[in-house]
Length: 353
Image (cartoon, rainbow, N blue to C red; front, top):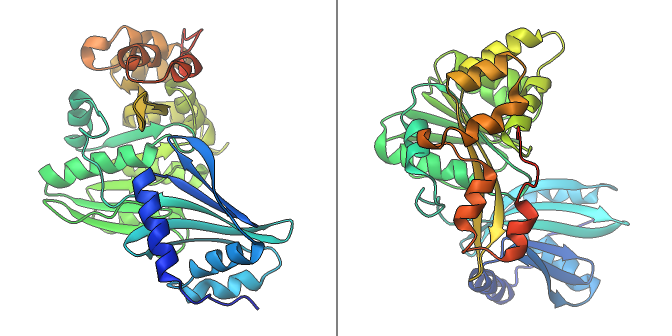
């Protein structure tokens, strides 16, 4: 039977200090060694015995003994959040070739300001003052989508007296109420799924709903329903590119939902799409490169007419409105990022994207 280990406070104090100093974003505890990610790059941090790393993993359960029984299963797969000496972690424990492993995401101390992550004021104003609509932040895993949403909620919290309900998996940034009243719910702890959390939220009188991810047809349906019925909905998609993200949302809806109806609802509800990826800075750290689409009449018409693949042309032609294509954004930050990042993300053939 797996048991919680005695907590080695000195060891964890050293580890937490090291994480802060090196600005690590992820840690992996593998049988016999520990690795981490800094500025998107993987590095080996520590080596020892498998007994050492098993002990380290079990210490993560010190504040969550209710989950220990899951480790007894032949194929455990456990997701939870915990805090160690003031540092919050999102933890995924599992077995690989029957050996215990853990993947750990370091959760930030506080939500960032929009200025800290270079969110354009025009885009921010469009989102934060909107009475209703759907805002999508898209990108691959680890592209900073949650951080961007947190910065938006942080600004709303400072300027609007509204009720905000979030459904997250897990809760990464913890907000303190300012002008807004924010209720944060975690999938797996407070509600069983994004879709049911969204359904619950609609009966809790919100002005704004943050859904951590539109993950399936049910969450897509409820998110659209919420935006149609007068709520501002903020969410993410694991997609790349504005046009592909819109197409993905359309295709997520069930076959019983007519495509023409889907396109009509999405074109009317969609407010802003921010597609992003993180690039390494020359001086350390990372910066987001974004493609931004502010939905206007032309964008709505293209969605309804199945022409979203040509949205890149519209975005490039609408710089004066606050839109920007990825290549132009990369050109603007080229002096800040390492050359390989510019070359990796620059779209050679970006027509229609």
